[in-house]
Image 1: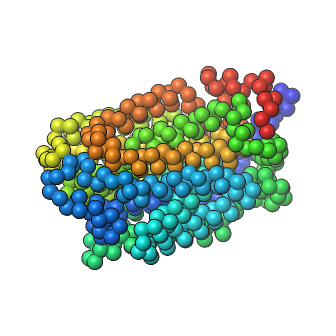
Image 2: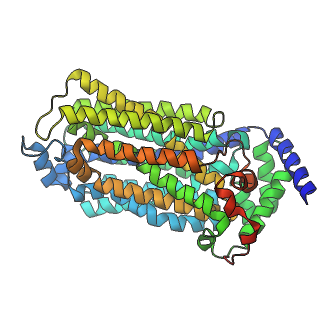
Image 3: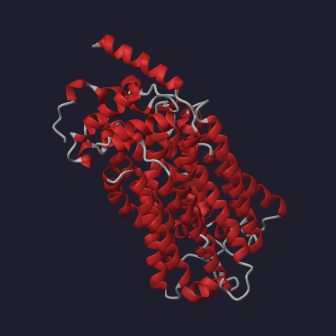
Length: 510
């Protein structure tokens, strides 16, 4: 048996070397990754919309009145309103629920059809958001957009990990996060332009332009091929073999094909996929997936991108200056994610996460010190030089996140679960991520009002904790074939290897 395993490993290595980076893989990945574009656009668009006077007058007149009062509200509290925050956070609550249904469709209908479902949700939600005048219909639109996020975030990282050749899997997977950062930047630019439209209808343009990436994702889902893993898992072996040859650009795919068939056979034996996640051997990727989603949100990044214009306005920037600052940080986010695309398969996941931890911690502490000294409840002494310093520190923080926790927080969970647990595992990842997004979106403005400058110290403390977690418990997965994670990663890790004992294989969970 040992000899067979050795030969299989050698053959696998030979096949992986022969795999080419084919045009169909690049084309499919680029189209699929527009799910990230939609996600990023929705993350950022609400912060600008909820700061627009036309939107506030129409749907939240009490908040609008509060923003117009002089010296009666704290700088940190003028936008604190639970119903306004619900407009932003409702999307993530809907995504949380939708992710469980997406797990079923991803497994039974395939990756391709699940992307189509996500695109349809996005289109219908966008129409309801932009075209109607009643708040309840707009909220319904946000809920449908959230369903699109739940389905899209469930399927796209899986699709990218399964279709990509091993040696560039990290870079192609990060296309999802890269598109998300581009979506954030585009949303910020759209908000900047829409805020200048006279007549108070600019918010409709901001919400309506989400239809562009939604349409791209929907049409793209009709064009892309499904992954060999998905086809084989659904019993379409001949089609799976044909697609595998096409995407790898070689006829010599038998070893990889056999691996996928075997993984599919094991997956079909699992009758209760979510209960299967609790099996001892699945606990390492499950714990890491959950932890990474929690940590990703508690870096504080989405607090910045949800409410960037509001946040900078609270720091004492003028309305135009706050939008300029948000655009700058959005651009830094895109450029830094591109850095990750090129580095993640060279320097590895762990190195990027650990370096970023230091960078994020120091920048957040620096911002907290400036705000503590210069911005009080009813006045601010933020000079031009200090304002520039704050923007630079926020950009340093954003750049660190963009080449680490942003993309890698999605990459590692999508590549470490075995096939029989992959769909359910990704569903749990999305669910936890959306739950944390909902919590941050719902309570951030309240926390800003209560904590004031210390909000940055709160998030910096989380950065310390997550950096220790990476140092001790996250293994390196660079250049490891996706179906060989158990043997080459988990069984060799100083802590997680205890969960891989064959003694526990028969724990009865099916």
